[in-house]
Image (cartoon, helix red, strand yellow):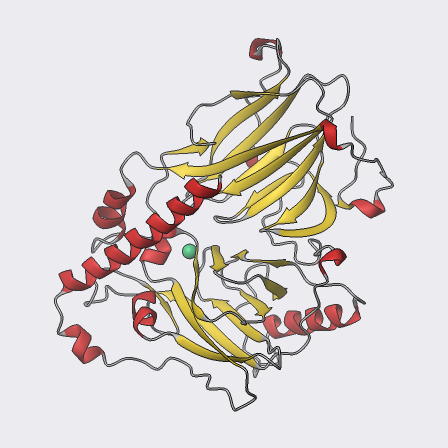
Length: 419
Ligand SMILES: [Cu+2]
């Protein structure tokens, strides 16, 4: 059995050299599943007048199929299983455990990290990881346990990597495994632990030129323009930011950093994803701290933010967790920083597709300039809704559905051409 302990691999004393010819590389995609076509779920349930943001999850998929106990071959000479794991679902957080094995996480959302040992992985929608599992000489199978989050509990599945000739009926099935009791299960983002590998020459973004605050909540009432309840960011749904994005002008000779404070005025976790950039996670709550406002210096959120800023200031040469997707707890906050140096309109949104359709998205419109002239950052101002209100509800719903469809086509295209 492998004697790794949780934490950074450099601290565990295991200095094994990995031989390239002993590595078996595989992809595992995890997804929630709905019996109805997602367009129907969205238009008939989520966007109806009584529709909620979380339709019932009917099942889960591992590598695109619904089978429980699916078997893949473990090559006879495999010494290390290298798994690229992707939560490609619509909504559910995915839990993944490899029975009786600790594994080493080496990559988060495309960023190589200092090897980190753990027992159970929690993947919010959109998150990606690469892990390494050591296979002992006498091992004939690896049992992967997966829990797909749904409103009450998990859809539980297993898959197996087995050496040729080994039969499923000869292994212990452990049907009494409880996902919530898996060892080392922790849904909080490990932003102090998943440190980018120093070879990538990244630097901690200590200063920022601009800080914006996004408060998000679910509207109390049905919004007449849309005929359903929507998520609002600073009082507006995503559909309004499509028309009026936040604008940022980046000066190429200054390397300016943008800070975003995301405040959850909501009881649920939401997986936020930024297009176009990796961001550094400076600080995050664990749930219940309440929102962070830089002028409210007595709040629990501000104290945690202050502790984290001091922490990173003392970490010589270390860079905070850097990725493009994080799971923000309810009644809490996150602080991210990045260099917005690519021109374009970039989506920043909850990766639960139902929530994005219901308004939980934002757009950052980046322009770049070579000069050091004054930047023209502008916060969105409320639009003239009297004009919007006069439009027919059906017109707005059609627009929402069209935006949703375009996003789904883009995501499916990405998955199709990259996997
Ligand atoms: Cu969400």
